[in-house]
Amino acid sequence: MSKVDSNIRSIAELKGKTIVSPAGSTNIKQALEFNSRLNLGMTIVPAQDQGEAFLMVEIGRAVAFVQDDIVLAGLIAIAKDPKAYVISEDAFSKPEPYGIMLRKDDAAFKAVADAATSALYKSPESAALYAKWFTQPIPPKGVNLNIPMSPAMKRAFENPTDSPDPAAY
Image 1 (cartoon, rainbow, N blue to C red):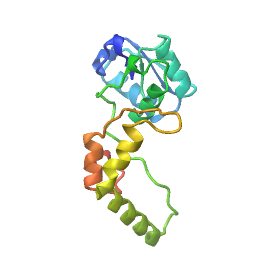
Image 2 (spheres, rainbow, N blue to C red; image 1 turned 180 degrees about the horizontal axis):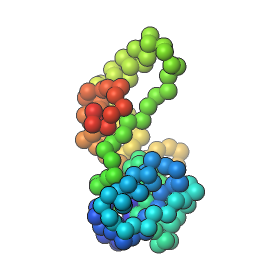
Image 3 (tube, helix red, strand yellow; image 1 turned 30 degrees about the vertical axis):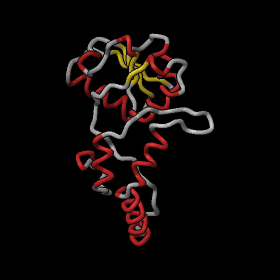
Image 4 (cartoon, rainbow, N blue to C red; image 1 turned 180 degrees about the vertical axis):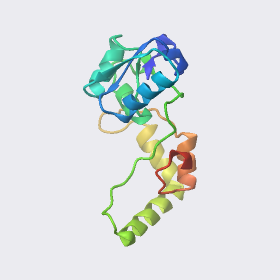
């Protein structure tokens, strides 16, 4: 995520720039790996939390904030000027699945949970639910995340899997 007026739209355009991500996050680890592998010369600043990272971009101490797109969309939606920010389509990784915690070694319960979520994902209701929470104002404050369903999410809804492998999406 960066400010629209920075014209940063790709990882390559971060060369020599200062970026921020929460300390200890997967995202900062990925940024460090890309920086080294691609010799980008980025200055990577670890922030205490997402709020501090967003503030660093807002006040110009960093040109970009590296984090999951849905987290960034939430922060942008509540910013003073949401239209001032953009989420790049370029990413350090493929989309990664979020998971539902289940009791370990309870195959019967996992089968019930898998069947219920799979049925919901494949139903027409999934698109309506997604739109309600990600493309429309959310009560009570009317915050709109403005994040349309990605092609990867559409594929995941069409073909649900419990694979943790991002390539499965």
